[in-house]
Length: 428
Ligand code: CTP
Image (cartoon, rainbow, N blue to C red; front, side):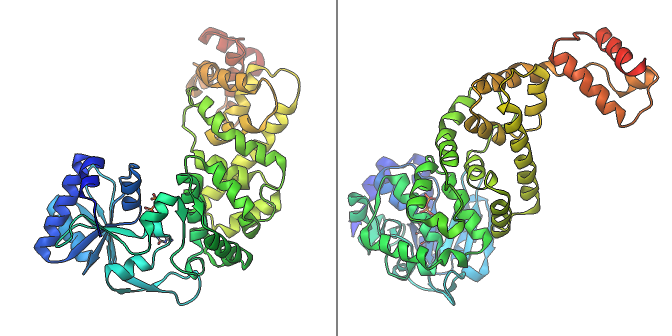
């Protein structure tokens, strides 16, 4: 066993060290062995910042989480079936506390049945060697690394390797995880693990994942700093074939995929009202702008909540409409540009920028956010229109649109001119 106390003191921030020491105190007081495990240990050895702490307790993890909550004045959410709890403390990311456990799977890809066990067995149920290390936080061997499967050597060699042949059968989500860690850390999935991945994909193990779990993995993967590399790897391993064969089967979508990163960087300098969610744009490129049938099939498969499904359907319509509008060669009037963009979510704006070959596109987006959004403000309101003798009703919408268009196009610049316009267009 290797002493990593030196790495802890030199690589972690003071508040992390203080927290781990306090965990050790609570563990000693309650006479249980506690370990920090998984990604935190991996990243400590790689000297990568990671603030997500996962604790494993040889004993009752839920009771231990409650003790920590008492000490730090925090709260817990408990999941009795799995013997785990999430500890929420003021001003720091939540901490997962688990009872050391073995897992058995009643059928492939099902959620596991769990039983309390030792740290050794707990580490043995994990996904990859580099994620299966622990650091003891209490008692004899405090701050020693527990590395039973050669995780540290694999970290040095840059390898992603499963602990046993059934790993992807137990949990097909690990197919996505393997790709994610490989691309993020610039590692390589080792030969036998890659074989197991190919056979899991070929045997359609993905089909056994619930829509929620599949969606969750896609979201996490697309939230990586460089999701395109992950997506490329998914293509190469035919993982998309297992989800929907039509995805990314043409150059158009692949070109958009590759332009999103630089488009987002460019758009970061534009004062957009809502900042786009990057993962959602990649997700849109994969699913939203595919053909109708694939889109519907995928939305059902991913078990989308009604509100997100509704948002995607409307974004999809707006995207198609805008692509048509922008395909015209003629220069668009300011009000036309405004009316196209005001319907779009910020994600669709990025997608349009990446997808549209219209050379003026960037200029239009800049004008919209920097100029037209402000000049679209009108002075007259509903009461003013009633005061001018108009009947309240649906026609007000047309009046306001006409006023806004005229403002954006510079045809009216004051309240008096707005009144003149209403009189000439709607009252004569
Ligand atoms: N784990 C696993 N199999 C999974 C998911 C998780 O074995 N399907 C284990 C791994 O040991 C992993 C740990 O649970 O390290 C924590 O999972 P998670 O927080 O999802 O991953 P991290 O390794 O912390 O990675 P990240 O940096 O992406 O948060």
